[in-house]
Image (tube, rainbow, N blue to C red; front, side, top):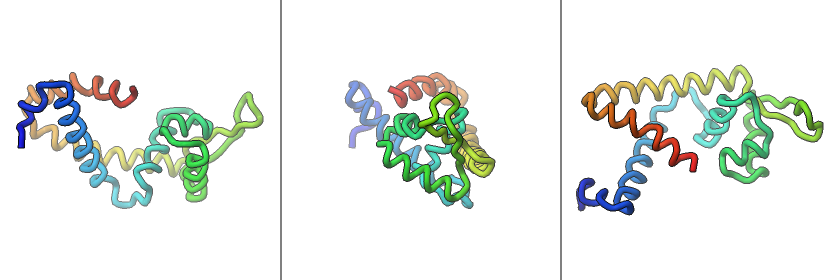
Length: 148
């Protein structure tokens, strides 16, 4: 099997290495979810999106999570039934509703993030200062790639 140094010399090789590493890290972080969390990763993605905003319409949520609006409607319905989100009328368009986090949803997001951040903080402490510096520089670049 080729080493990272050899395969990452080309853009295609770097893409392959990054894809594999990011996917493995995502799976590892998923394992570290809060044990009381009954929600799927997709549900948590919606709650996280709502946490970063003052509320979004179903269409805005669907676009942000890159799913179709009917699928997002089903997701929001399930979250609302379990008390994680609430709906309110749109301020300027009476045809629309805005979905926002409930107190339960906010607490769930914060507990889940806290647990995974604690795990990742411990792993980062195992790295050298230079390795952590590289990751600090890479984090905004990875964010740009994720949002492209």
